[in-house]
Amino acid sequence: MGFAQVLDPVAISLGPLQIHWYGIIMGSAVLIGLWLAIREGKRHGLDSELFLDLIIWVIPAAIIGARLYYVAFEWEYYSQNPADIFAIWKGGLAIHGGLIGALLAGAVFVRKREISFLHMADIVAPSIIIGQCIGRWGNFMNQEAHGGEVTRSFLEGLMLPNWIIEQMNIQGVYYHPTFLYESLWTLVGFGMLLLLRRFNPRRGEVFFTYLIWYSLGRFFIEGLRTDSLTFEGPAWLASFINGLWSPMQILFEPGWMTDGNIRIAQLVSLLLVLLGIALIIFRRVRGQAHESYYQKKESIEG
Image (cartoon, rainbow, N blue to C red):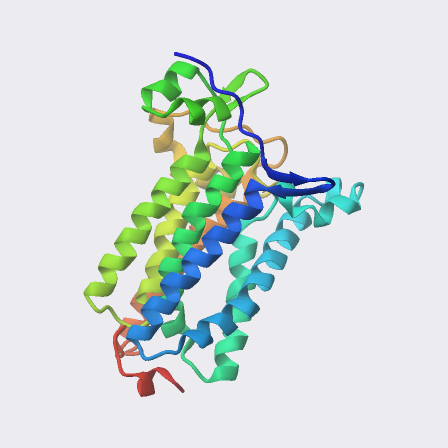
């Protein structure tokens, strides 16, 4: 089998101007997600301009939130290299930070437009998860967000094309393509959310299912990574999280942590799984989930 050349993260160079694949892929993810949201919004009587306005609020907030989240937990490095704080084309956008920023901006937007937050969240949930699915390929181009060391034969055993295998070759060492694991997990989640909509669930439950599904996969995949944001937490919490992840050790070795004993993304993912489940149960028990996903426009507002 021939060996492929490592892919260049720069797509286009025009003198000093460089356009990175990371930016192109992220931009494509946004446009595809917007198109899907507009298409679904029309089925609910919502004008496409509403989603165009929403994206103006949400995307900057998501980028800022994702970057601030990452920089905050890597402050030891960025305090010594402040110019790199703005170098987002090098990677370093934390999905959980982006989600927080997007949700906060979206909450303010729908409040100003007097639209139900949960109904809007249901509509855009498939857009979010397919955006994450596509966006992970930006990490692939940057050779980041990978897992621990593996052999080439392991990657060949996954039936991966040679260009993916060689992109996982970093300075002569092959690594787990965790970007691919998460991309496939979110692709399945995207299909599941589309299927769930056909059953006309209660308001908010498409979005809550997104939180549960994405976070469940992220929890287990994160344990394979070697670049996790970490902190030093109580030993009992670290043991609890490691115990939940331990079934993965039947097949895989966990990725190493350079410092800390708790991966932040695992802890946040675990909390989001519990939150999503709790909200579904709580709203149903309290009788707050009486409205369904499909409904007339006038009942969406207010």
